[in-house]
Length: 384
Image 1 (spheres, rainbow, N blue to C red):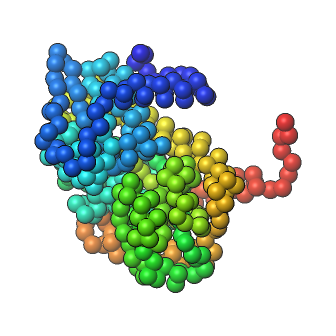
Image 2 (cartoon, rainbow, N blue to C red; image 1 turned 60 degrees about the horizontal axis):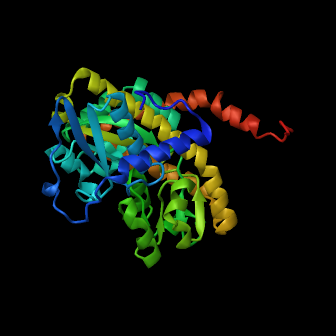
Image 3 (spheres, helix red, strand yellow; image 1 turned 60 degrees about the vertical axis):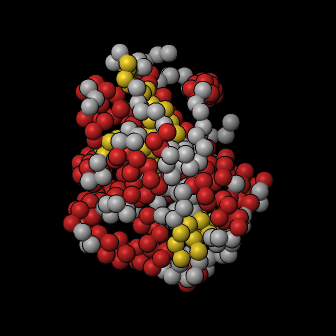
């Protein structure tokens, strides 16, 4: 193995990555649900080599999300030349998915992988780090974290949960969700039982919906059984893999609620502080690589997956009416503002995001937005 990610491109790189993951996971014993976390062996330390465990909130090996966690672990192992290896467990294999943060905080495991809004019940400010309705797109989100003070604020938030924070992926602009009825006005959210997390869920709740928060693996059966009427998940690549088209007819866009959702990798502070500086640097670099890898994986696969949903499975693709988006936007401003005002840390994080958003909108008008408008003009382009 090399100590850097493969430089191969295209199908060869994908085959190499799949082969690596298959070999790496072949010997992993799958823990039955409900087994006490204490039955898992503690990390080993032998001749300067350590073995850590990371649990995700996702189903194991799930496209984009689970494979992003695998990629992170793979990079750490190779870049450290085996001095630090990370075994990946899916949500529920050690503890229930939404208890992953508690397991890392307590030292039961060393690392976790999920999304910041899952931890809003512990520190409310975490939900703003994940994604804000009508907020920052993926490029803006990454820029805010790296150059807009986001990393420092996220570290401050996660320190209260006993963890070190890393951005470890971005889903891109998500889809608006799966519905069994058409959405003509914001009134159609009233009484709707919908799985939607984070700040988007708070907006739907304010619109009169009944919001349910479920980990990914529980969504398909809940939608199939009628326990929920609607759900959002991520986008075509993930939604096709989950088979959500089997239980809902209408697929709405755009994902106003999550325009650039951050995935988080969090390391217990005690474990983090016990590492040498070079291993800390390897973990930071691994997350930077995983962040780009996950975003690119979604971008590369979403369009083909959407075509499969529409053409093969006869899903009805629909855009939210502008009136609905306008009403949801105004409602989002009020809901997010009220939640941010509820505690000093939330206010600090949201004020930073709002400032960065204002600057981003101003420049986007003459850069990306103007380019998209130009690219959409009806001229004839390259014809091969």
